[in-house]
Length: 65
Image 1 (cartoon, one colour):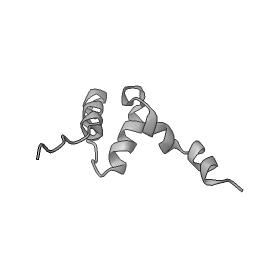
Image 2 (cartoon, one colour):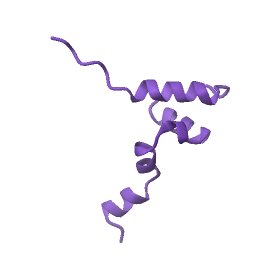
Image 3 (tube, one colour):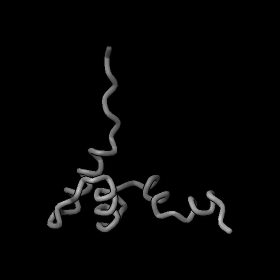
Image 4 (tube, helix red, strand yellow):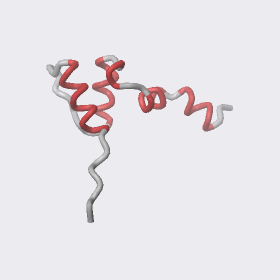
């Protein structure tokens, strides 16, 4: 019976969470965007998808209050 650690290590999401998006396949890019409700355009280029992923990976700026 697999443990939670076993399932995490075998998860495709674990790989995607720690990989550089520039090395992802088009399918991985589309899957990542789709999973976050960012529905990529079917005709979007690889560069457009990568730009959108990087924009959504950024941390929001900290408030200066």
